[in-house]
Image (cartoon, rainbow, N blue to C red):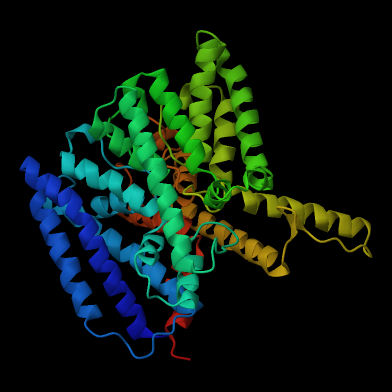
Length: 481
């Protein structure tokens, strides 16, 4: 383990995060809000620690897979701790564990909240809360790579692999820093486009900006207690639905389209399945909830919004889907596990990973019937390496173990099975709302502090695809040999 280089990189990250936190600080100063003290403390603490860790660059600057995992996990954990300070110091969230839970939920783009009255927060706290979604959506380290051009490509790739969502990570262009910049350029452009559309639809600029932050990160932190339902606008619903869908697509497809390879992008197998699942789920739910709404189009409006919100793991709400038939709720819970496309800002297992699992299962069944046959698995028209399938299987094993262990620990709280099960599911898959006590019109405030720590770990583990958090806690990671 190259401890000095890990500390150096974390120091650079602290400085960058301190600079980003200056945005809500400026807003707090302009609005003369009490949160300014909390933001000043957090900014100064990160700057001091960052400059201390970065005062001398290590002679050995090599970063390998192990260091990459530790840097990513350590970055997300520590930035969440610092990010919680403004909420806690200002007293807007009196408990530090609650403030940490809310901040982790923000950075991991989960959208699970402990707040009973969101609208009582100050403007700067609301801004920081939604801005954490935007920072975490594309990835803290992807942002760092985009603005640190001197990093060695191999080192950067280890970091990007550890943070990026999905079973495979590749470069769009020859240099990984340029890839990060392209990703962020697309990310910023789509965010600004959504802000403009929402403003045009009649939302105030502040509302448009913060809802766009949450949509872009597929996080779901709303600034109204009733979430998007508070606006009661079909146009707003439609705009946010479209952008949730777009942010759930693999960003490499946008790059292909921009570079002129539109047909190649449209041939994406993962995109076809993503579209298919949204289409089928929307139709089934629309027909199922039709008796509860006035007309097919009205039912379609609410069905498609919730389907896209759940499969992209955004978690915005326009209807209390707990009032829908169990059939519709079951479809939403299935989509909750599937998640969005790999390489998007969405969470969940990812469509490509589910596809690999399905194909591997059918291949194994064919192998049982015809033992001598040899079949290669293909995804996106290309044969899959054996290592990718093995990694997916390992991921699913760790995922299942984490889910069961978390569910068991949460059962110590006096909640229903549906509450505990969906609480773990929605946090591990970075969705937000679940069912029963954590349903769309409820929150996580009643859980014990111990359960909130467990769920915070689940959110971090889910966003970082499990391996970085497991590596951070593994004793073997910290051995010198």
